[in-house]
Length: 179
Length: 108
Image 1 (cartoon, each protein chain N blue to C red):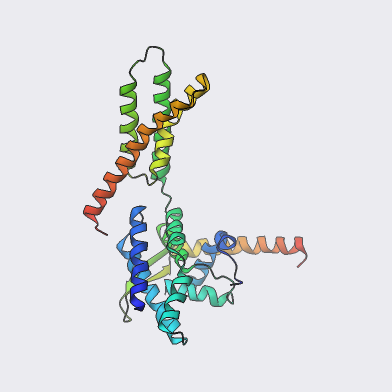
Image 2: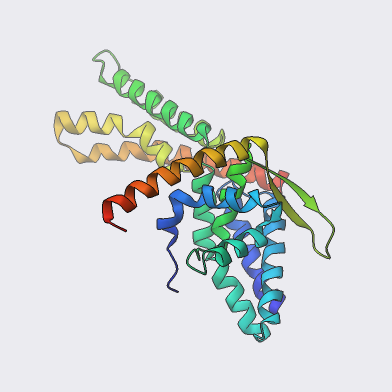
């Protein structure tokens, strides 16, 4: 019974860490060892198995808090570089779109989709951020010119691309390191 | 819980962890217990938030770690590296200056 709640916590933690791309076997083994040691210590203090388990999990922190701390601590330079590339690609696409001689929205939409997909496939953990960084510049420029908010629909292309790339990366990771 | 919150501790956690490990190698659970005991329960942050900090200090070369099979359970034991020792000394000196200035200012 005690093992079950702890195991359930570990499974949730593993899945959330894996989803954010910050899970590794050693970390999870370390956390499991900590939880079991804490559980034993709480039982030695005279708590019932159920109370010891509750105390152990409360002291360790919620899955959300722990995952968020891991994510913050592992802010890698690569994540910043990928956002930088997304901004550059987005600004370039807005420049191309603003040229009076440019008349191929299809190519531009495909470009936004592909670039966003590539950047999340390469490892960025926040598809929405990549989609915004790539796709916001064309709508901003056009809203400035025409005050027509419908142009925000352009964001759909980088959103589809970014989440597509992210899902493909999750699929690849799942094949290599199953949860 | 009347302990200091995670937010208030955030800027000082590295120094605290390095100082605890300066006394000798320890695994994560022991480090966290020591943190609670030395602070008389004031530094009582979610235990799971200490591991990311330990891992970061390790990736910065301030800590090293080895898996120990000595006990019934596998444990990852952390130790201070020479670089970690240098950083600890420098942060301790900074903290002395800082706390002296704060104390002088608030009249403690």
